[in-house]
Structures are given as structure tokens and as C-alpha cells.
Amino acid sequence: MVTVTYSGLAAWISGVAGATAGDIHQLDDGSYSGAAITMASVSGVTAKSKNLLGAVLTGGPISIGGDGLTFEGFDLQYVKATGDFVLFDGTACRFTRNLCHFDNGGTGDQKWFMIRDNNVMFDHNTVFGKTTVDDMFLVGGGTQRRSGRILYNHFHTFNEGTNNTKSEVLRIGESSMVFIDFGCEVAYNLFETIDADTEVISVKSMNNNIHHNTFRNTNGSLVLRQAVLNHIHNNVFINTGMRVHGNNHEIDHNCFIRNTLGGVSRTLFLASATVADHIIQSGTNNNAGSSGTAISLNSDEAKVYNCNIHDNVIAMDDQATGLIVMLGDSTSEAFQPTSNFFSYNIIQALDGTLTNAISGSVGWGHNVLSGNILYISGSAALGDMKTSGYFNVNPQLLRTSDLAVRCTYVLNSGDVGVVGP
Image (cartoon, rainbow, N blue to C red; front, side):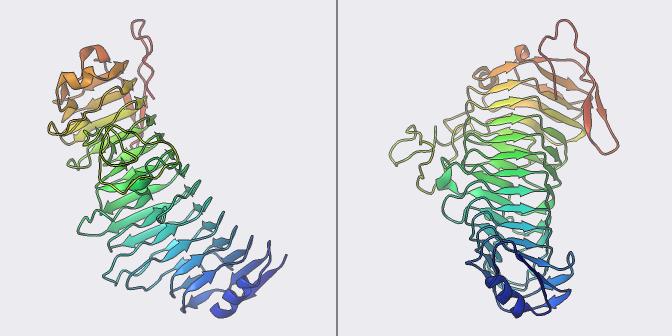
């Protein structure tokens, strides 16, 4: 196990290619421009900047193909007209503590990061400044990829301009992978100042864990698109929201604070659907797929059912726009949300409408409601949630200087089971 420092890009690349497990090959401070960087056929090697962000790379794309390879500490300022920038083709690779602000002079589609193998760790990076079409970050690469971890990153300033539907900040899977167990963890990240696709995160796979992230001013939503069995919890949404498709999701202990954007960025939105479920083969819309089975690429929106939505705080105060919690969005679509469990949530607003089911009270009547608190602090409307599903009491929310919200409501003897986040 050795540590070697290089003052030239070509020598550093060559050194990494010939390294053995445990070796550290570091690039000295300076600005380096050159051909593509390909790191394959090595295992357990660390390729890093000698000093954090001291080595600036402005060359070609990077392919991280060695298993267990760590890429650390670079300032990446690439110039590339089109195509992908960083590809992860090795198992158990790590990309950490890099500053990524790629040049956007190109006019073609550009994916900035693409995970194409298992157990990749992407952590403590800052990624910003994208203006071109296509994903900032894709987990999938066309085939199933498992157990990626995207932790403690700052994704910001993605202003694509045309709101192209391919331009998500993060996409996990694709529509054919709705029943593929990705098992990705997305946690402790900050997503902010986004104006691209309406889906800031688009989940197109199953069994992902998205928690303890902050979404702020994203002009779009976290969307469970073609997805089942995902867990969304302990996130903070400020001027943004969540849209839900599919079934068996757990959505709990999230905090929604303000939403001046309206439109597609509705606060909490359980959509209506074009099909009862995603299918293995064409010809029927009720032949649900099974775990581990890929299906055809599709644009279907599957029915929302058997989702457990509980212990969330929705504190809109005087900054809400329009509808706050929506159940369904189109009477022309045959499959409205049913058999979902909506319990112990707190919804408070000064303006807007707290609850709305596209099919009226019948929509809420086909779901299980219990122990929620709905409270108007100004001129808002309660909406059409069944009165048996909520208490109309002041939850006594306390807002701190950083916009966080804490519930100080004290249980009364008749409020058994009302807990709140």
C-alpha cells in the first residue's frame, strides 16, 4: 500500500491504472485539461486531489469502472458539447467531496452523472449550474442497478429553461423498472433553486428510501412516477411538494412549509390514474407485475392505493397557493386513489383549500381517514375531507427562525390517538 503524488494528468491516470488495492494516487494542485479519464481494471484504489479542490479538471468525461475505486476531492469544470460526463461502471465505487460545475456551452442532451453498477456511494459533493436538457443524475443506465447511496450532497441551480420532461435533478430507474428492487438511499441532501422538469426527483423503481432531505424553491415536485413500495420520510419541503403514483408507499413525518408556486408544485398530490396497475404484458390493465420483473417502457400512470400517509405536518401559513392536499386530479381518468390510509397528519393554512378530492366526498370515502388535524388560521377553506376523519382544533404550531415547524398541541381526553409529527 503506497501513496504517490503526481504533477501531470497523464502520469496520474497511468499510475491509477497500475495501482493495487489500498494504494492512494493523488494529483497535485493545478489546472489539468486532457482526454477522457478511464479508470478500469483496478480494485480498492483511491484516486484523489492532493488537497481538497486543489486539482481542477477541465478535460474529457470520466468513466469510473474499477470495483471499489474512490474518486475524491476534485474541482470538475468540464467543457463538453454533448453526452454524459461521469459514468460509474464499477461495483462499490465512491465519488466524494467533489465540486461539479460543468460547462453548458453544448446544445445536445447531457447527463451529468450515470450509475450503471451496484453499491455506488455518491456523497458530500456539490453539483450546480446545469442549463442543458437531460438528467443531472441518473441511477439506472438502462438496466437494473441496486443499493446506490446518494448522501449529504448539495444539488442546486438547474435552470434548463424549456422545462423539458427529461430534465430531472435525480431519476431512479425508468418506466420499465417499476417492479425492480433498486434499494437506493437518498438522504441528507439539499435540493434548491431548480427550474427544469416538473419532477425534481423521479422515482421509477421500487423499494427506495428517501429521507432527511431538504427541498427548497424547486418549481416542481418529488414524484413517485412508475413506482411501488417506496418510503418517503422525514423530509422538509419549502416552496415545493410531492406527487404520488403507484401503490404501497409509506409517506410519513415529512414537513411541508409554504408553497407560493402552485401549479404542478401542489403540496401533497395523490394523482388519478390511467391504469389500475402496471402490467407484465399488454392487453389488460389489471395484470399487476411482480417484484424483479421488467416490463415494457410505458407512460402509464398507475392507480394510487394501499399507501400509508401519516404523521406529516403541512404548515402553509399565509404562503399557500390554491389546493394543498389533493386526491385525484381528473374525472376523465377511471382510477381514482382508493384504499389509502391517511392518519394523524396536521394541515394548517391561512389561504387556499386544505383538502380536495376530485370526485368530492366520495373520493375520501374510499380511503381510510383517522386522527388528522385540519385548522384554518385565516381565510382558507377546509375543503371536502369527511368530518369523521379529522379534528378541527388549533395544533399550536410553533415556527422557529429557520422556518422549521414544531407542534405544541396538548392532547385532550377526547383526542385519543392524535399525535402529529
